[in-house]
Length: 66
Image (tube, rainbow, N blue to C red; front, side, top):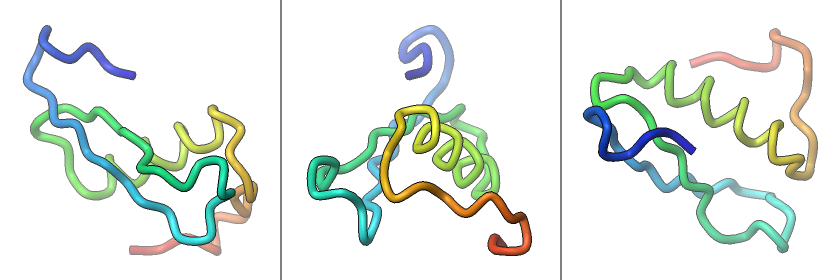
């Protein structure tokens, strides 16, 4: 969940459409203060997968773009 307080970070609340009702609340993602949008998206996808959220993400990279 990041090391809030030890370096400059931002906590972003991400709301995911179509998420499992059990996880209907915001997913809290902690990123470095100088993170870019692509960093946030990548970390959000990693955290979503790591937490075992449903529905599972499509593993095809062709499905993702900015």
